[in-house]
Length: 331
Image (tube, rainbow, N blue to C red):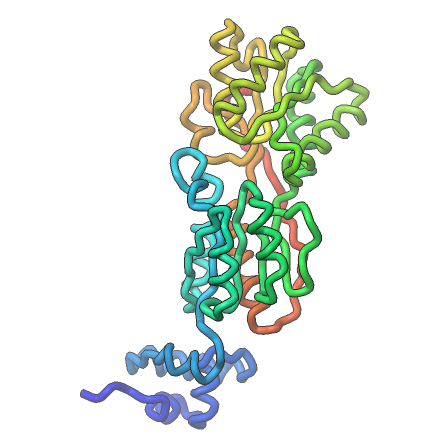
């Protein structure tokens, strides 16, 4: 039995060959009813697009790169990037676009790859910025979507999808105030990360508006060890703190260990509130309350934005999704 052709699909759908070809090539400039008829007939016949031929005709690869640091995918640190990747992969495959993992490990291989036409656009998922790589990526002519706001102006052919980190910081402070806490410390992320700075600023502004003097701030690197070290410094400076807002769940897990080892009960003596709502928040004892970033939804939105940019469509280039409180037992 011969493979069905575009002509077969067009005949069955009752449209011209040119219209069927445009629909099967991914055009969005065909009447929706005709598009639906062509796609239904293609499924019925088992028609499969010759992607190589389509790529040659259109100059498009049919793929979008997912730029991620592979060292951020292992162990507990991988929760953040993995959730975004899950959303992005689903968003791309749902519209028949091939996701391609592009490793960014502090060298220029990623920029060479992106410049060779292997992908039509790229989604950049870097929790910790590599200055050399991000600067080179930003200078690329390829359409880019940054997940998380980079610490530099994005190019004309780029977009940003982010969570409301500032609002999340305010929500964290307000939640701890509402639970009756007054001496609220903060374990912040790296000083050179926009997200970490926004969370700290939101926490501080909410306390000032409530006429509460912010407690001590210690900085960590979004790792459990970083949270452990920061919590030890806070206790040494201010042993009477009764709450801590921590800029990531992983650091909050490290802080929890220190508080418990020092004889402080969580939440009776010290309330603890994390950020991200990744898997580690549910594995501690007590489980961590956390400000949730909609990571999978950010990945899915990034996929939609990258696809639109690669087709030259007009989109909102700066999108921010709300953060929400997930209450467990630590506050």
